[in-house]
Image (cartoon, rainbow, N blue to C red):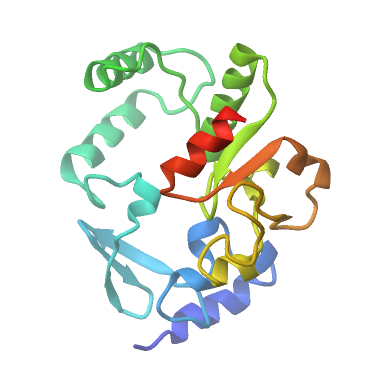
Amino acid sequence: MIYKKSKSLLEEALKYVAGGVNGRLGTFNHYASGDTPLYIKNAKGSKIFDVDGNEFIDYQAALGAIVLGYSHDSVNQAVKDQIDQVSVTGMNSELETEVAKKIINDVPCAEQVIFSNTGTEATSMCLRIARAHSGKNKIIKFEGVYHGWADWGRVDISNEALALGGLSGGGSRLSPIKTIMEAGIPESVMNDLIIVPWNDPHTFEEVVKR
């Protein structure tokens, strides 16, 4: 495949955008091209098309946000109808209550709803509510799992340990060696964070009981 236009757009973006990309899905290692992120021109259903005319089946679906596929006719029409009435005011609307009702109806365990703009906001709010309710500070995070850009979400076991297949080489399963994944995050964040292996109920139960 040819990625000439994507490479050209990246060169231009690097002049104005930090790192040349916005968001996790724009990074280099998420696409087949390897040496450049893709620049998307349009999308329909499960297919995305880049500026070079390459066609891809998108299994990421904008991290799950596009569950009905891209440019779904009824979704597009609903968005257009709403924009014709009002877009964003920062105040309340009848629509948010109606959407909350539908969510609670479809998710029986949900008693009430809080809307957020991003996954980072949602996970941070959940964490704050859990701490307020329990009075506890420590949290458990599963290895290799992405929870957003908040400081606590960017702690994991070392890349070397992950490359070896999980916690091997990264400490014991109950006490893995933690590391901060990005600069600018204080080490104190790790004090209240416990990393446990993914898909290991036994270890999870042991950690919770301690």
